[in-house]
Amino acid sequence: MYYVYIIKSIKTKGIYIGSTNDLRRRFVEHNSGKSFSTKHKMPWKLIYYEAFLSEKDARERERQLKNHGQANGHLKKRIANSLKI
Image (tube, rainbow, N blue to C red):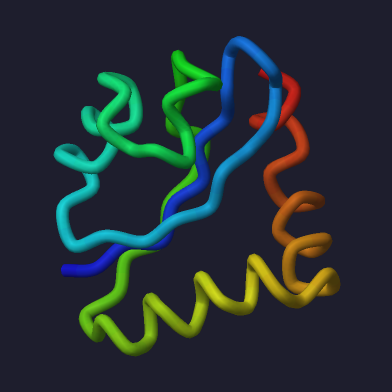
């Protein structure tokens, strides 16, 4: 299984979008400072994820969310209450 996920920094309230084949391991890496791009904004909480059977589908969805404002905007509207937490 492959995952696209959104984590939110408790410290800065910023979000990070990523993909992985092991969501639990990757989340631990984010919160233990093993990820260079997120270590300065710890701690993180998982606020959303999508699961895919295909790695290619997961990577494409991650790319959509990162590069297409419209896709990102639609998702943020769907999870608006989760983003407030």
